[in-house]
Image (cartoon, rainbow, N blue to C red; front, side, top):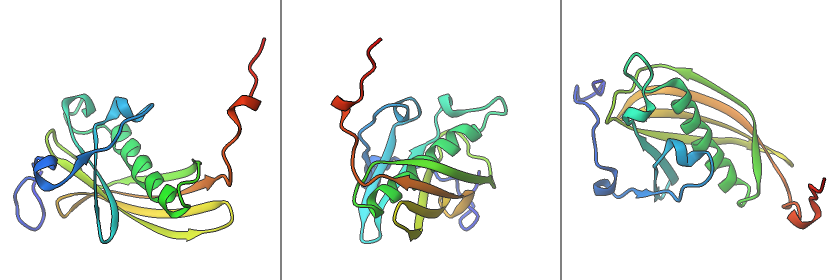
Length: 155
């Protein structure tokens, strides 16, 4: 896929561009690695499309794009709430353009509003300057972490 402004494909080496690998955990480990970079505008996330992300048409699977959108917007919500635990309660994604193997997808996220327990966000996923998806969602955050010791699963 060509970048709409330059006509060139957006293949980069994230590490050479100042990105570092985000510490993987849980489900995200199966999709990553995810890359992160912080600047004056905040934390940015990215992912390089790999063969494991492809669908039968040979482009990045919508589920992989949706997972990346969830992680990126969720990270923005997490920072907006002072790193409180949270869950996604709604996520809408519109797929705009295909992503080929080797292309680097980044997310630009915006916190729209934070209430007493919800965070409303929107974002754009890009390959270079080409929009590949748009997203909006709502995250619920919790004021305190449950005490794991009080959670009993005894039979």
